[in-house]
Length: 586
Image 1: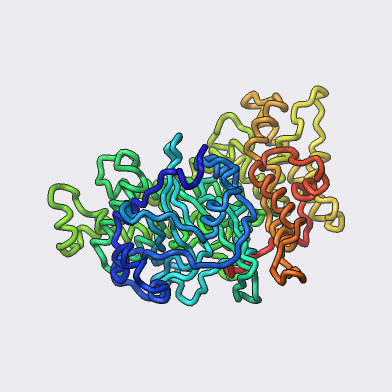
Image 2: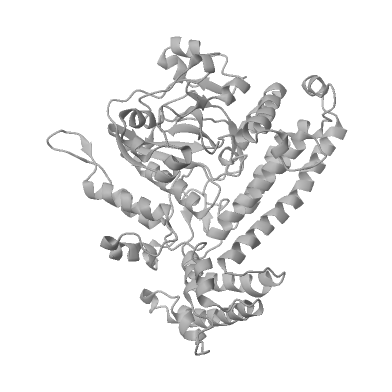
């Protein structure tokens, strides 16, 4: 383990892509004034701008992810160093002009809620560097969210509020703990003297984030919008060589490297959305600028995890048409993949033989090429569906503790179970955890399915007798089907099945009401003596405990001194907390 200063650093992306022509190099970035660098503008060429995080006087480190520090090769004690704390708060910058290491913001475009939004970009994100774990070779692109205005801020102030930063910090690490492909969160820093105007004035924070790559579908949208073939070629080649580490790591095929790139991105996103559906995760804002080429969950705004099972639920308060509801997530991700295919269309159609670069850059696209690209995209539609279903079936079989898979499982077991959860308004993740704890094959040989089914309902729903009674009857029938399915494959060892299911079905779910409770507890108040905004010790301690549960969501218990709190956080959700939504304000 080492320190942040000693970790090897690089910046391949800025050596492969074209910078903002107004800031062509690091020397120019250092000479230009802050107002010029952050001045909003539409770029006709280039896809990043060199600039440093905004200077801010006062900051406080609130939390770090020990899991990510370990993955990066950092000693946990490094989080106490002044240089580390200043770096993750944007107040110290590693730079090496000779090696091209200097902060920058990326430009991209995209479709938002299905409509073209034009140029977007890192409006409050500053990328720092790429670092590599010396032992494992795993690489991380490190960036700061909330680090100040950039040329791509549009009407934004470049700030991130503490409320949304807490949500993003914990969501990133929770998804990783579940095994879901995601961007990561390294640190959370609070700025006592800094406020942002949202619906009201709110305290600000920075989340230091890391990912194998931050390349999004929206970056390809940008070059298509500009009709910038040179930029598209640079981006596609960088994605192949810099993100996927070469053609050898793309999905195997005899087709061109660009078709293979597209097929690989489609597969990764199909598999990723299968994880979301299996675990009840809803992103809330699946625009093309929020869609990763690696299939990573990215940019956590109004996200949520399913409580009572409602396929049409959207966690986004502004999503009136339910475009980003749980049910629609797979189709929306495929819609985004079609937009990517259209952006890459000319590259998909070209034969990559000798001289193809010159032909691509200079020759017009004919109808035959357009048809060829359309056929490739259409073919990937079938791939997306089959890849999604294969991964979803695999994950749901694991969650149900099934050792084998049968074609009839969907129709005879999974669909009846999900229909029952919906009609009976049962908690999605709690049901799977409790299924693992039920003795379906007791020594007595007697199983009362009605009593077991009744145990899945909240005690506070006794006033809904019709729903509970009907739900109990339906669930009891599903439980009998489940027992028969387990018996058919010889899975009659309840203790062995419980052990297997409890490592894939979380005991702790990062629910919206828990996050809201934490945000309330951690709300800064003014110290009458120093006139500075401070967070109460009790709030910081609660953040530490929730982070502890977030990093190990499958455990039965975390801290014996807070057993009552843990029972509340892992127990049945009160009806008043069902279906909580958030706005996009952050």
